Amino acid sequence: MASALHNLSDYDPTSVPSTDGMRFGIVVSEWNSDVTGRLLEGAYETLQRHGVSEDRIIVKTVPGSFELIFGSAQMVKSGLVDAVIAIGCVIRGDTPHFDYICQGATQGLADLNLHGDVPVIYGLLTCNNLEQAMQRCGGSLGNKGDEAAVTAIKMVDFRQHLRR
Ligand code: DLZ
Image 1 (tube, protein in one colour):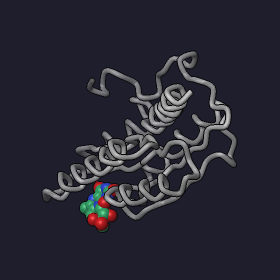
Image 2: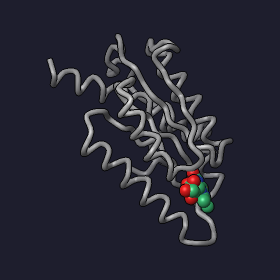
Image 3: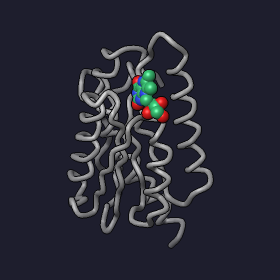
């Protein structure tokens, strides 16, 4: 669905499971930090709104969105978290670099989900310009960080239910 039709911060709070004992890792890219800082804020505050205390959230930074793959893989391997939220923002430039970073990061994060037991949530904005990014990190279209946090909670619950 095009995000212009959907506010990223809109969700039904009653659909969000209990977060009792859940632990979350957030990996944030330093590139476009004005944007990723806001995404992080959204994700962090949404986790806290749903009862996740500070001591159950680990935040680590990586240089760019391409490094979200390694950073998330390391978080998964650490065994310290039940889900990882990968946060980044890639903005199209004059060269094909944008496409390579988006494809690489997306495929890398998808691989972690396929081959691992810890869900890795796609909190990556891939935008044509800064305006589009600002609209999606707390602007007119909500905050993708909020969406990523709610998704992380639901995916941890999904896995816990299968194991019960
Ligand atoms: C090099 C680069 C460029 C041009 N643009 C972005 C961007 O818009 N968003 C982002 O997160 N990272 C960018 N990077 C950095 C790459 O993700 C990566 O950090 C470097 O290529 C080093 O591996």
